[in-house]
Amino acid sequence: MDGVDAALVRLGGPAEKPRVQLLAFSTAPYPKAVVRKLLAIAGGRSTSAGEISQLNFLLGEFFAEAALKVCRQAGVRPRRLEVIGSHGQTIYHQGFPTTIGGRRTSSTLQIGEPSVIAARTGATVVADFRTADLAAGGQGAPLVPLVDYLLLRHPRQGRVALNIGGIANVTVIPARARPEQVFGFDTGPGNMVIDGLVRHFTAGRQKYDVQGRLAAQGKVIEFLLARILRMPFFRRPPPKSTGREQFGSDFLSRYFFSRRGASVADLVRTATELTARTIAEALERLVFPRAKVHRLIVSGGGAHNRLLLSRLRELLPGLPIELSDLYGLPIKAKEAIAFALLADRSLHGLPGNLPRVTGASRAVVLGKIMRP
Image (cartoon, rainbow, N blue to C red):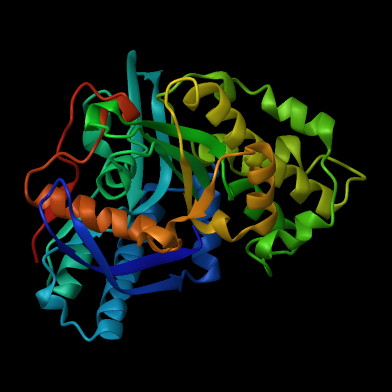
């Protein structure tokens, strides 16, 4: 929720065995006032349709600028782009239906107007990826598992791709897997709780715990961790997805900000342990009994947290844990690469979800296409 990542990618090979080359990557932070507003809206604070509408178009401008910047870095003219994939900024996601107007309804909302991106860049844009999966009865997330399958499957090794972004999620790719054999789910918070604590206690001066240094100075508050681990989400079987609605500002207020007498380091250490333990327990309980795993391949911002990776190695002894860089997928760029690939599939009428992962009734083409 801090800014926009942009990757310029060259794709080649057949659709079901693509080759990916990263040509350039950049990250552009949002203005602080925009970050505060997005966090407030995603956290359930009151707003207006007008404010969301304005943010939608403003973020479209930011996304277009990020796309143009990464093209300049690589010396590529924007009109040479075949397609831009824009996931958008999630401000609400509810994968499980609730009752409204007498009907059970799931919903999701990502903003960052794709028509603006298309107009500013002159390129075709695919955006709003989650809604087609929701309409097919799925949870709309996670969507990266299809890309994990296409790029990381192996004839002799079972692999798990672990992405530690705001939310942590896994994709399980058995050896010689076919698409219908791949499964995955969100394990719980990744960096979201850690970052929220750091941002709160530094009054926004620091956005994350650099390499886990702050957490390394603290101790786990075991009774608090045990209380959090009793949340129903962690016991729910897959398919399952989650987000800021469960682990955002309300969660922080309920479990962490009320802990008088606890040091900041102890709180951040507890949040780090929450991420490590829920990932490890999800693998032990929901993955290892169903698939033989030879490698855990980690990506996302959490892969830079040395304490977090150290704890994963301690909790999962005997399982090699490697960074996605070793597989041609740079840690920070992997999700941006994934949506470039998903956009290309959508442009060619190919499905982008895995029903066993999202719970959808069928594989569907994702996104909406905007022409310049």
